[in-house]
Amino acid sequence: MSRCVWSRVMPMRSHLYFAVCVQEERAEYIRKVINLSPEVYGSYARDNAECLAMSTVTMPFVKITQLCMGVMSACQVLFMISRAPRVPWEAIYLPATEMISYSLSYFGQGYVRLANGKVLPWCRMAAWLCTCPIMLGLVSNMALIKYKSQPLNPMMIAASIIRTVFGISATMAETDDVIWTHFFFAFVCFIFEMVCAYAIFALTIDDFKQVGSPLAMRAVQRLYMLRAVFFCTWFCFPVLWILSSTYLCVIDENASALLYLIADISCKNCYGLLLWATTWGILNGKWDREYARNRDADGMLMEIKDDEKPAVIAPPNENFDVKLFGTTVASVRRSVRRPRADSEFVDRSDHEPRRRARDYESDGSSDEINRRGVSRDDSRRDRDYKRDYDRELRRDFNDRGVKARDEKDRRRRNERRDRDHQDEYDTRRRDDRDYDTRMPSHNSSSDALQTQMMAMASSGNEADVAALLELLKKSTKVEAKNDSSMC
Image 1 (tube, rainbow, N blue to C red):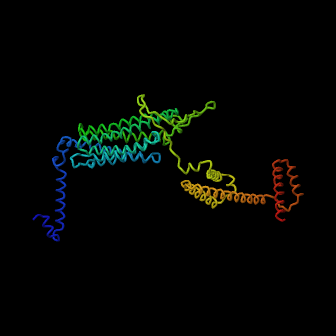
Image 2 (image 1 turned 180 degrees about the vertical axis):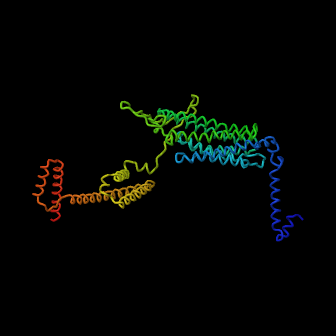
Image 3 (image 1 turned 90 degrees about the vertical axis):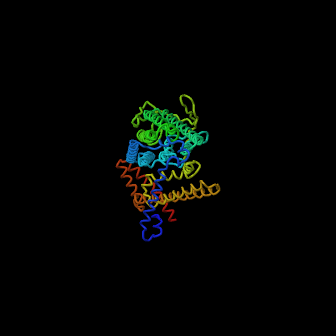
């Protein structure tokens, strides 16, 4: 009787012994699975034993290089965090992804052996899936393009995800027909991404060339560098995929891992640093051609002489032809970012809310209102009223009932008119109260007023005479008002 059977028969006497036996059996089973000979795997392992042997990293130098890459990426993450808030989140995300992927590769968790015997570098391809759409999103921030009425920027990012999925499927496939089918669809998506990215780079370079300032030309030089780094490194990845152990097995995994590491440094780490240094070191954090107007190479505004007129920048062309070596390879249209629906509705000139918002903004900063001393409760009430009004306005914009909108507009105009009348009445009462505090007693005779006026006139001060005449006019109006109220 084996030890495990004996343990099951007498569980109360040797429960610990039975647990140790089960662990030994499990360890022996795992040892058998890991040390399976190539013949136990599928046809790929039997037919490609030499390529299978080249699919793993065996040199310690490669492991140490991957560890250095992870440490360097971690240092870049800390450096970018220290530059917050003048840094985009993508500049932190890309090196963080490289840090995780190369750390897993160093600890031997970057490869998976499939049932057919192939070795899948899943950590590398997972990093592609996590970083390629983000990098294309950084390129999309430069300009928005479209073909006829279809926006190309989101299509480019979607093509990146599809391309990575087909690339992983081609790596897992066995026969050449299936591999080349997946590779064909992946390569078509890759070419579409490169054409869109080239069009965006060309459009952005042309925009800054039209500005013509020293700062704009410096940005153009950086854009040329970014474009060269982007395309040279991205085209290395499909070439390495074909030559490495994932398909032709021309180079082993030791060499391909080092080449992939160099491509990742150039494509993600160096490209991210160069992009951050351009957007935040030269520009104002975004690709704004208006910011580059009349600025020197250091970003300082240039002085314009009196006899010189500021340079007038022509508006960007809507249609743009993308040329490569003098040949037009694509023709795209510039896409303009749309404003929010509520802002577009409020800015319409045929609606009262625009005038009302302008009145509230002017009243809030008016010196006259501040002099009168509007209380804090009144300011909060006006603020809450404006907020509720804007909420109703946004709801009405989505409502298709024209009659309901007209009725609410009429009601709001009436409320605004009543509030204006009330404010005018309060202002009149406040002015009368202030006037009563400044005027002398109404019971004083006209002779006393005339004597006071003659005394001030004899002083020779024209300002006193004008002020006294104004007070006399207001006194006459107040007396007439009091007489009418008595009647």
